[in-house]
Length: 276
Image (tube, rainbow, N blue to C red; front, top):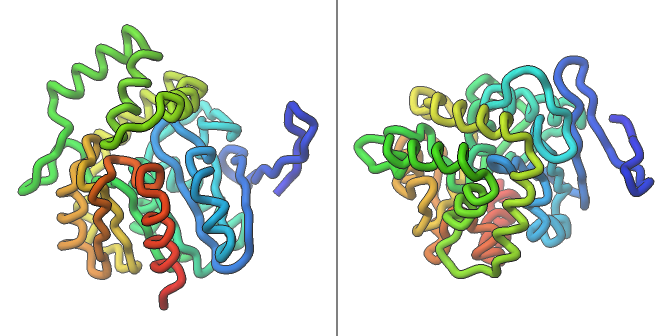
C-alpha cells in the first residue's frame, strides 16, 4: 500500500502490486472483510449508499477496477479476466481472509472468474444482477439479442452522453430522481470510452457456464425481479448449477437492488456475510 495526495491535498490509499496496475481503494469499519466490486463504467462510489451501514459490522473494502475511477488506466485489455487479476491483487495486497466477495453485474463475472481460477481468499460470494453469459442462457431467456446489441452500439458511437444516460435508466424498475441517473452516468463518462468498449466486448465474449459447477463457495444470488439489463432467469440457472448457491429476489428492483431496495439489500447481505 502507498499513500498519495489527492487534488484536494488528502492522503488517499493506493495498492501497487508487483505486477499489474495501481489500484485505488477505500475501507471502513472493522470485522469480517466485505469486498465490493463495482459494475461496468462505474467506480467505488456506486457503493456509497450501503457502505456506512455495512461498516457498522464489517470491514468494508471497495476499490476501482483498472481503468475506472482513480485506478490506473493500462495499455493492456480491460475485461473480466483482468478484473479478476485486480481482485486477486486487492485480496493478496490487503492480506484478506474469510472474505465475503460481492460483485455487481460485470463485477460479479470478475468475482466468479477469480474463484474459478482457484482464488482462496474469498469464503463467500455475493452476486448482484449477474449473468454467466450474455448471449445465451438456454433454456432461459436473455435480454441481450443481436438487434439490441447493434442498437446500443450505434447509439454509443453516435452520442455517448445520451447513450450512457439511457443505459443507466434501464438499471431501474422504480422511478428514481434524475440526479441518480446522472450520478451513475458521470462515473461512466469519466471512464475512457475505449475502456468501456473493451469491457463490453469482454462481457459478450465471456462464458462462465462451464465453470459454474466448480464454484463451491457458498453463494448468495441477489437479483431484481424486474431487471431489464441482466435476465432474472440467469440467477435461476446459477442457483440450479452452483453447488452451494441460494437466491434472494428483490421484487421491486431492477438491475440495482442495492440502490432501489437498499434496506432489504443491506439486511440480506449482512445476514449472509455473518452466517457460518
